Length: 119
Image (cartoon, rainbow, N blue to C red; front, side):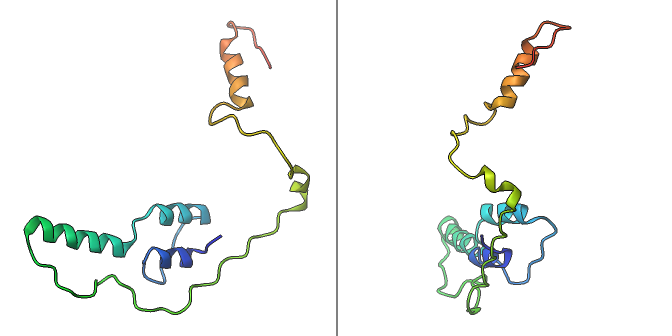
């Protein structure tokens, strides 16, 4: 699992960004983001083609300087012992909205008024 700092570097964001959300939200945001450097290079090329301006051969402003090695990856936490018995082979999930809870709710909705059917 990659740390937020490591994901920021991959996406060419500046070092030191602070996030006010959980790890999963950070991973979603950074995973779905367009790298800053890619956006700058594309914007400059689109501008040059649409406006017919010559692109100057200069270093993009968002190109980060060499910052040394990547931050260390986070070590995953061990799985709590209470979940060890859940490891093994299981049938594939039937798909989103098609699990056993959905079947229960469908049977409840199909029951005549005043009668509950529990599957």
